[in-house]
Length: 169
Ligand code: ADP
Image (cartoon, rainbow, N blue to C red; front, side, top):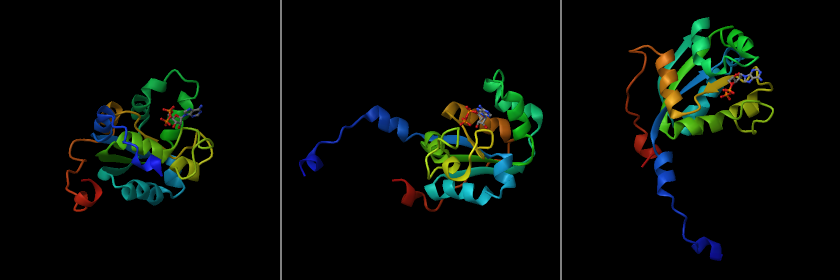
């Protein structure tokens, strides 16, 4: 059809922003861990083609949970949120990739799992905001901040994926 011959709309600033290599902090929350969803959740980021740079099972102290969620400290659900995050082990991950921050948020789905699209982690695996199984940083700046907060020096790995040229050109 004629439409196929339409010139593409090219927005260089958007392309540049999308192709930026970023880091994001992804965390399987205590419910995701207790429910045996660790492999399932990690698998979705692996299959997408992102690069895992840090991974650990960790019992989060209260102070760290409060620091991580400090922007929400005035919310009525804040004490509940801190109890939830510290209620059992979490799986901490640092992932790297082109546009990984926004892309991971899409893979995770919106905050309330009942509104999250089928195909997303929350859309497929959870039913309530207070038990939404996974966290993902909301900006590249917070990605860096949260990775620095949850990982110590020496806990992150620099490595070269052999599949690199088959994932990105
Ligand atoms: P997201 O994790 O999708 O970025 P927010 O930053 O708004 O969402 O909130 C952080 C976390 O706080 C949520 O993932 C959820 O676990 C919890 N939370 C948010 N809103 C509520 C709420 N109304 N009741 C209980 N917990 C909530």
